Length: 307
Image 1 (tube, one colour):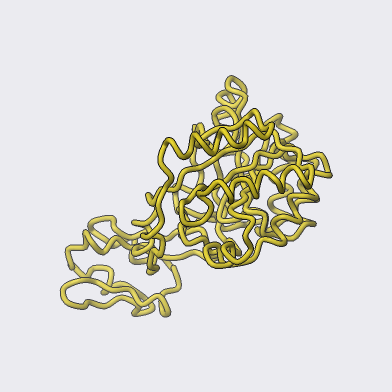
Image 2 (cartoon, helix red, strand yellow; image 1 turned 135 degrees about the horizontal axis):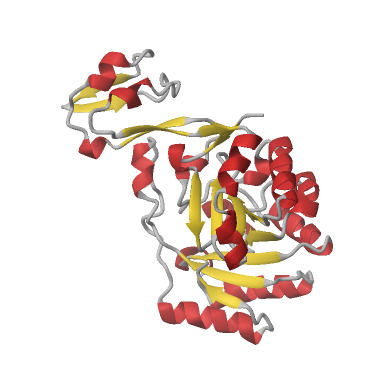
């Protein structure tokens, strides 16, 4: 079965040391039900293929305009503009851009093709205790027949699978993958539901419910907390998360505090979006170390900044 993955030809990132243990290959799936203001991968929010265009470096040769079958490209003030309402992501323009400034984000693989690609770094997984991470977007809202078959095949090969998830997906999808997944990297942004709606685009009820069910099912869970001053960068907010994890008896193998950064902001204009996180800030190094201390004092001994 075909399935659309993100990042064009870069949809499979090899030899990573983030998003799980050891050396990893990370597969980014397109599509997510949340809209985090600071999203680092806005190109993964849509479930469909989409055009990306670096108009800042465009020289205005208009080669793309002349070949576009949908007439979605035209010139304005010496710059080329793409009408996204007309573009069908056919990719014709990418073949004719003299500066290689255009790409179509999203590539289709069969399970066989993807497994073949992931096996190439098998030696690195074995030597480092690494494996494959399925990320996004939100892989848990993808075609679950595809994802389940992929996880089964990797498990048979002895390649461990980690799922990177925001938690906003049907519980039955997690239940299907439990037998094949070694670790879930699970995001908690904030316990304050109104702040969650404001910055993440939805409430946190389903996210917390799924986390509690995963814990009761015996899953290995790494809690990941994107740490942002305006969202959760206070003692009160961190203590709320700590209290929740204790009160619900969530079995946490590791806590990762991830300082905010805006390195993904440059992607937004390329796909016709506006980055709305310019007023957000990362806590200082001292503040991050302080938050780490709060978790350690509360009995969470495996706490890291980053990862």
